[in-house]
Length: 401
Image (cartoon, rainbow, N blue to C red; front, top):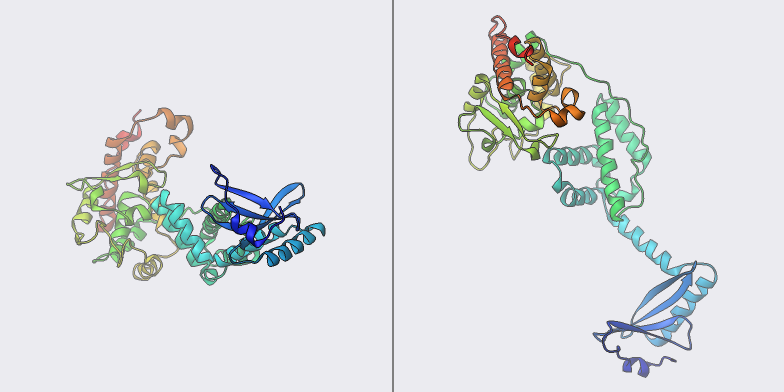
């Protein structure tokens, strides 16, 4: 059909169809799409590399037939020259979309759409690390972040003695951009094959004297002081202790049940609490408006770096991290005669003696042994702090089997 304005106006979609195409006999490739709802729009159809392509030109009410033919003629000419106008338009639109997607917006989308189903501890750590490390790039398009920029940021962390943080940040960034690529928001990742500085395996364990000084330096009120003592008495992870909720404790404060959603390995963890830990909990004020035992100013405590620096100055103990308290507890339990399986159960480890086939068939929870171990450890810490002899050991459990 040779299209005219009057014929276009008279076009109607065939019954039982959602749309139909009518092509112009005068200009090759030009057509009109008519929808069941009465809408009419111009398009150009052509083939490129053996595949059919269609490019919309606009509504018939907004674009004249003459302009539509002119546009179609130009597009067909470009196709004859080996170009792919529809593909180029799509690529340009995608590039514009990528340019509009800032790194901050991408992280926000990742947090809301993907991390919402992950462990809260992982989500918070990932988002915080990326926002903090790439603070200077947050308002720039995510697509503009290149490998050289990423390497500079990670190298800076490593040079500051934060090799472990550099490695973790690289993993978070790789996960972020991998997610964006799978969604079609980005085409490549600047974190791919990025060299990471080797992480030195830590083996720092606080001595009895350092334990005593750190404990004395955490006297007085404050969430951080209480968290440090709880870390030392329970051996649990920093994020698990800082997020401890009153609802996770039994009425007598003798048992803490860490839910799977907050556990690093995704498994519920039951922690028997020593008399010393129970006394610490009873000393905490129960604030209205929050279920947190050790709340920060707004929500979960977050002022780690400054608080740790003040603790180092007050105690005179340096060169250690809060995670080293977990290693200190594990080492201390071994010195008290606690068998390895019990120590790993206390720490909620699924590696080592509880990994592989052993973990599948060994279902014993070590509840009594864990309580005995943590009670003995609490007495031991109390003895260290008070300058008395070491507390009782539990060699009876070390030889059990």
